[in-house]
Length: 280
Image 1 (cartoon, helix red, strand yellow):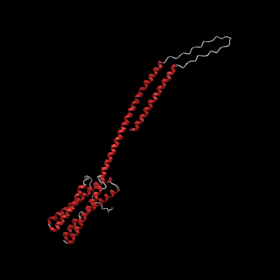
Image 2 (tube, helix red, strand yellow):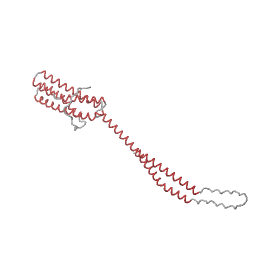
Image 3 (tube, helix red, strand yellow):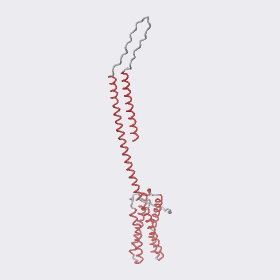
Image 4 (cartoon, helix red, strand yellow):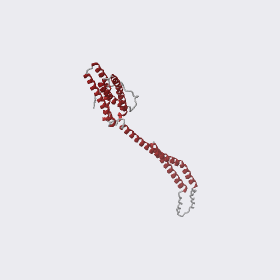
């Protein structure tokens, strides 16, 4: 439903509390009905005191309409972002009708003064019909506001659903955070163990050096005695085969073991540090 837009000359102050609109709206719905009942009684009794009371209530009605509009604007801003497209259009129409009622709240007073000046039956009929029309528009506005709350969830269902989703997301984030913290602690433990192993590497080297020192001395190659020269055909003497020194063998094994230990420790430390950085 698209209505002609009528601007309001004054802005709504932001200091109005949220969710005050339902309380003010009750007065905006009931007060016109009270005035109508008093006017019907006044047509029969024609008491001056009732006429004065009606004027006072008309002024109060204008104030109540102004309060209903202001509180409605604040509540609409608070919950409008959570509405669907259809609900948002409904809210805009509801706001525009509120502006209509705000301007129309001064019409009954003017028509009441007009009936006193003219003092004709038709003037009273026009006054009563216009006032009944304003009451009907007020009741329609109340119905539309109820649909915004109970059908589209303005400040009720949408807000609760949003808060529930936010709470679920918060719980999931907490679970994920706890899992990451456990992984980080495990990686820190592995990194500490790897660093401890790296500090133990010099002990391995020292142990290997001790093995080298404890290795037996190398076997010297026996000297080959000279064969006296004779006229006989020389017989070739085979040189004795010299076995590989046990010192060289032990030294190679120790160096290889130390290199493998250093390589394994460096590889573990690098991997654990990469995992720790990724987790953070």
